[in-house]
Image 1: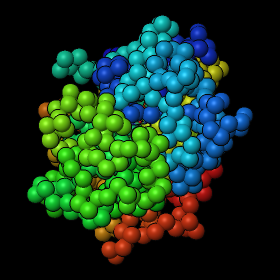
Image 2: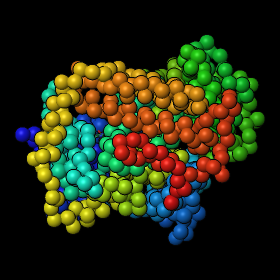
Image 3: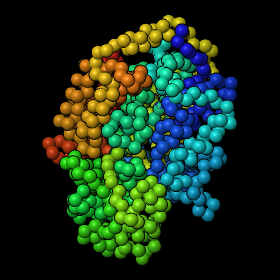
Image 4: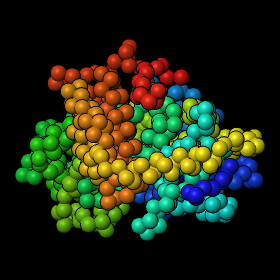
Length: 590
Ligand SMILES: Cc1cc2nc3c(=O)[nH]c(=O)nc-3n(C[C@H](O)[C@H](O)[C@H](O)COP(=O)(O)OP(=O)(O)OC[C@H]3O[C@@H](n4cnc5c(N)ncnc54)[C@H](O)[C@@H]3O)c2cc1C
């Protein structure tokens, strides 16, 4: 018979959210048997372990964060709600902000080496926030957080099963709650099915960058969590809102902050500056990264996207100033902002010298990673997918709409809205990781035993796997994945149009009708590709329905930017599987 295991709480995903949740399960109730499963290796897989930027940020309100006072978290909550385009759940935004101080203090107690000034954690201003709250350790803040969390996970002796990919959540007979998970354990080339029966499950599988042709996600991150939760009956919210940011093709480094505020030239392959009078906008791009429909630096993203669509490559060049650039002509507000992070006498130098003074570490980092700005190398840019704001809808306790199923981190939705202040994704992993872990643990403790006909379930699964193995109908999984990635790049990228999205949806429907079959990549890849198709369909349908621009969702109707429509669209789009069909509703956020 197929292998199976029983645990009280199963955590799926080993990023910052999953590990934080696992720790809290154990701390809440030490007798609960908890296991954390993760695709790939713990500490090596997922975004937390691999992401980096010029200064990776964790957003937090501390007692001394401006404007001080015991309710200073409320300013943070307001920022989350505002940049979220008022389409997040207000209470979730409050919870994030209110618990941020505790979250960072906990991480510090685990040994995260925050950069400090005068003995206090140093904070700087990030995009989407009114006051400086960005905390950091350097370009790899996320990795530092994960290292500290994993150390604690090991200290608590929490079981970890690596190289395990969850492909399906199992529901009880009457579908009233989740009771387990089917996945495959990969050892060398072998893929063996392994079922976990669990009283509660915390989903922490991260986002879906790899359903796009180019993303900053590690490959294989196809949004399995969105699909398996959806297939189990959970609501998905805000899935059309995805951060897309200009990043280095060679290194994956997000070209935000100082990399833009030093005002390099933006050139194409012919060394032409194809964006006119751009220097104020380039500066602004630094603090409005990734693309945001409410900020006029959006013009930079659009111009670069169009140039790339024409077939050209686009670069940042730090060797000299953009054409017509005069530091004195920079808008006065921007000049002030510039002076706050540098000395007053360097304004009339080259972009490279400005970068040297503001962020020398980034020059060193780029050199170590194959781009030598000192020698005149340029940074090739591409609009990369960086973060999914939406996901599996959660409530204040980290519960999804399926009983027994919790979600946290990037796979979860409702807390960010259309966009998020820089640093709030990592914060989210810690605040809702803790909340989901705690409540999953409490609920599991209350359940004495699940009445489950295990034998019957295992037999049904085995039959399903056998059928997949012999089916030769449909397109090969690898072809389908490639097509999904191409379609999304074309239709749900920097610019979205009704025609483009309808065409994209048409392509997805053809693939669905044709079906998918196993290829040499194996059964895990097959399931992940099916999942990618589902996520792509949800994303395109939601994007097509939202006939406005909000946050990173930029819609053009009849060639014109469709402006944000508060009357019609201060609402979120919720997707759910009902009677095997994808049902979409538009709701007022809670
Ligand atoms: C370049 C870049 C820069 C960023 N900068 C910032 C920043 O400065 N500040 C900020 O707040 N955020 C930033 N983010 C976003 C932030 O890093 C992520 O949102 C966050 O790390 C996600 O954590 P997570 O635990 O939810 O998911 P992940 O860290 O992605 O972990 C997901 C885990 O689930 C596992 N998994 C996936 N599918 C399965 C499956 N089917 N079965 C089993 N396991 C599975 C993965 O292997 C992994 O272990 C950045 C992201 C990128 C890409």
